[in-house]
Image (cartoon, rainbow, N blue to C red; front, top):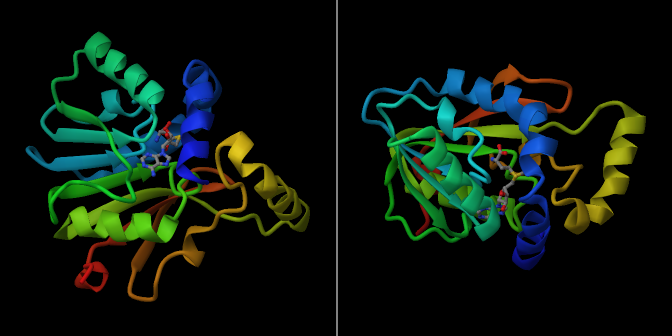
Length: 208
Ligand SMILES: C[S@@+](CC[C@H](N)C(=O)[O-])C[C@H]1O[C@@H](n2cnc3c(N)ncnc32)[C@H](O)[C@@H]1O
């Protein structure tokens, strides 16, 4: 999706996002928290943090930065941080995950939940995630798996032309995006469509 289409889609979604995508996507958010293996003081970046539904799930002794393209989604996240008293959330920034302003190796762990099927250029995003992650850090992704049921796969393919309207690419598949240098591990299955994946960081992705 193009940046302006993302902003328009999530400006519309912001008011109803928690009701529509809160409980239904919560198992994935919880599964990522289990997988992260956070240690006190870890610096975590969550890209596409949205309305911040995951923020109360992080341990209180880590430092979280969230970014998102949508001002309206971030506004909801900021209100949640205030309401839930979350001092471990250090910053919520309006920023394009494909062009981040953070220096290299700024974070110990990076989280991207339900974001890759939304962004304009997933490969560029993956490069950026590797760049801002510590050299031996980990990147955790809630990843869509294209259905091997032919009917569902055809439905997902059909939905692809409405991506800008519905706000994501229904036929997205992470494995099409990663290079052979990526070490990808499937950590858990959330349901039929979604998996928690870990990408090990490595020098292969450092931009020249
Ligand atoms: C499906 S929502 C997921 C929100 C959240 N991760 C959750 O679990 O509910 C996708 C989010 O990614 C954000 N997004 C899309 N493209 C982005 C980009 N290039 N940079 C930063 N955020 C982006 C959207 O604004 C939206 O808030």
